Image (cartoon, rainbow, N blue to C red; front, side, top):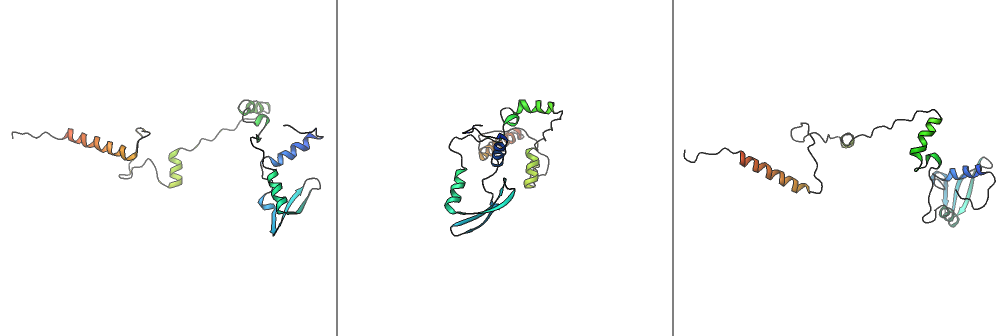
Length: 171
């Protein structure tokens, strides 16, 4: 973290940054009313430990919102230390070990069929004609469904033609 000038009480600065890292500058629930050219919002003053109301002009309110937009290519920090994305995999197990904690097991992600059955109410492995159980045979990528279907019908017709009984010409 870079501070422009030396600060007294780094803990206060960390607490201040922590309040703004994950939340918008003003929550919609804090906006009380808008009348013509002024906006009234409520906020919690951490110094006096009280809720206060403030009346601002439209321009002032927009300026305060815009001041929270980071400059272009500014790297936003969500987690740092042992929770940082780069260090999490190596340092978090060491933290668990130092605190004598057992790491939580990751829950297994539900499969495609379970999700489709829950969302659409249809089993993707059930045949729509005979209601039998379908078996996955393979996947073909990059082909259009109509071409795949016509190829399949052509193979079935060819198979029928080859299996047709040979009629005796001389009978």
